[in-house]
Length: 133
Image 1: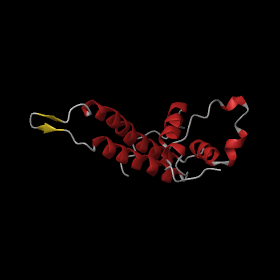
Image 2 (image 1 turned 180 degrees about the vertical axis):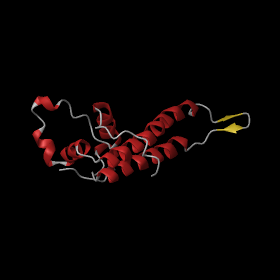
Image 3 (image 1 turned 45 degrees about the horizontal axis):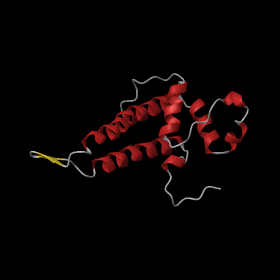
Image 4 (image 1 turned 60 degrees about the horizontal axis):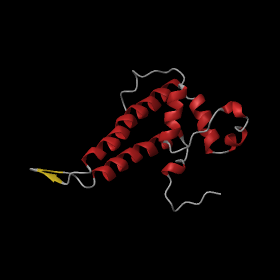
């Protein structure tokens, strides 16, 4: 993707990290100060935390470009709910698959973020056919 050169190369903020985890399908992890964090560093959760804290400047820009794509896609899914109550009005007819189409596009970009960071999609992005042990 081009266009990331104008984006910040500063370290990710806590809010950005929270959004990245969420977009990647991972649950909230709570405060690291709780003492319950050691197990995370042996799983995809810990790998993701390490990556977010150690990205190169160009990678930080790329991640921010992914975030810039994902925010409006997420809002678009939510906004599509406004049309669910109308099947047809005058010559306008709603797209019955709009929410599904928007979710598909949103999830595709979420998976691309996972791929860029080299982390498998989290539980929220997994299909029901996967078994977690």
